[in-house]
Image (tube, rainbow, N blue to C red; front, side, top):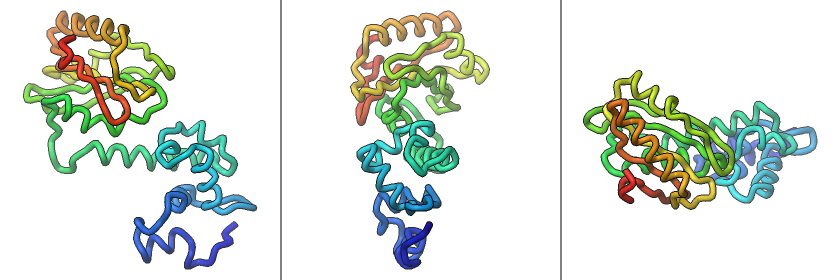
Length: 222
């Protein structure tokens, strides 16, 4: 039920004043689209921010978790998750330019926005051409909050199909601390050896934390 005057509704305010004039709750409300019988979309959005703590915390939640909030069903949760993912992808890409990944910092710029706030550990592989240009990337596995299962066959199959010259391995630490574990080092060495047998080069393995990263190539592990 809409109880606000038309001039105070987020959609109208955005139209006349621009998106920067809206509060976080109002922007969330626009993605929700509607409220419930006794609460407006803005009321629900405010409750979400209070429940999770901040807009960034809402953005890091999976759709199933968002549906636990009263007034947020599967459709609204999917709309929110899609909007946040679009924002991550836009931050990670430079329109109209080919993505070159020659340094760990360039890799983090491209993939940090996609991975640093994830609540689950995700293992990704970036496929590069001979000039370190990004051909494409794909998610190899999604694990629990603390670990992911990585099958070397699944890691290198896309590289073989794409005829990639080299690959960059990436995974995130949901804790936010990118310090490599013993298992990270063991897995990296195993994958480097598998790649060598296949005639592929592992350019680097980046562990992504919140706002920072560790390059295992810079650590001398690759």
